[in-house]
Image (cartoon, rainbow, N blue to C red):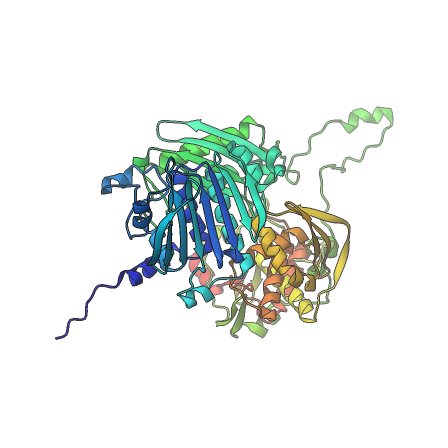
Length: 637
């Protein structure tokens, strides 16, 4: 039998390893800057051209390398950071795997100039796809100057999978921001296509935040500081009133390393419960310092996923520190009386006033809020105007129940089954069928004595009885679907009409977002947006799409930018319009937790059921769940 197992050549093995470590140009920036930090640099300059496709250059004033070290640095598993396995549990450096430079050299052309401090001459090393072409002495500045050219030149498939320049540049900038934020004491400069986008001197953490994300954050930040034997936490959180619906600035760091940690993220959000709207997110910049032996960073090649030995105690310390910061600076809301259910407090007694011949209307309640009788006055706007649609929902159901539905998405279409009575998943029967104190009213709540067959539960769901059982509708998703269909229809007619804004709205974006907006501004003009760049971090919006009321144009723009950053490059006009329509619909839709009148609920359901595919949102999320009469009966057996 012929032997079939053999060792892969180093060049192939390096390319395989590069697939894990070097995923896009931003990965190269991350690895090279981290090496510069480990080398003790106090000044780091990052230069990119064509979003990193043509050139990524990192120049630092660190300790540099000898000619032998320069050559060894590109061998697999060659590192100066650790010596044995035990060192993995006492890491104080950013890198330690010894894979980054070998992976970069395997998929690019590398030109390295480096010289140790105090030396008279340095060395220049040229590598082309893992092959060393030359190494010779050269006069250069102390430190390291690494140029990575023509990334993925020898892997055309990987190169084709790179996204548009604006998206790749945005990814690079976000990686640069993380690195600059976690190392506030180092001078940083970022140059893109000969244009300086960032230049920051070493400073405090707060000043670095302002340098990166704008001086407008200065009055929004609350300091967080605590020190225990287990962990020390320093940083800032945003005031509750400055929470963002989109694009929240959220950064966690440990021992000088950026990390993603859903558990601690949830701890922060828990501290803001009942302080911010349910659809908003707080800003936070938190740095943890722990004993290196109590964390494991060797989980993923990117080294961003960290495992903590003392997660539960740190959770408690973190939440206590954040709540203390919010309370200390009086950032929590004042007392909010429930004006709907509040008891009537008799300040004056009318019978005592009768002797003064003063007539008092004892039915007057200054705290009572009248329910708007005209649904067009509600923020739902066009989608809730009278259209003559009836309220016979059983008849409407007959038109689509059991029929296949088409689920639109930004990347294409897929066929999904019709309504399935078994789809409904409930926390409990009580949660679905019994409204809480804030739930919307049921039958008899409409003006003029007209009855409504709906109730609102938790100000999030609408329940209605049908011939076959009970229908549960997610109000936010339902309105997203209704608005989406309206907007898509108007965009399909050609360029969407726009309306001038009387006073142009000035808004700020991060450099990464600005890069994307510059790239797609022409497309957005065809959708009714007109904007201009004011310099620095500021943009001005002068026109917005005239397609639906209740849409926040700036919030919609940021949503479009973020969706575009994560989408694959696609020039298909239909998919682009679908993506824009979905972003606009999400911005204009009613929010979870918003109380609706009976008339508003009925009209929303009517509008939804008139659509050919009401079951799912454009991105495939369930809107309607059914619980059959048999399932109801089973609950009470």
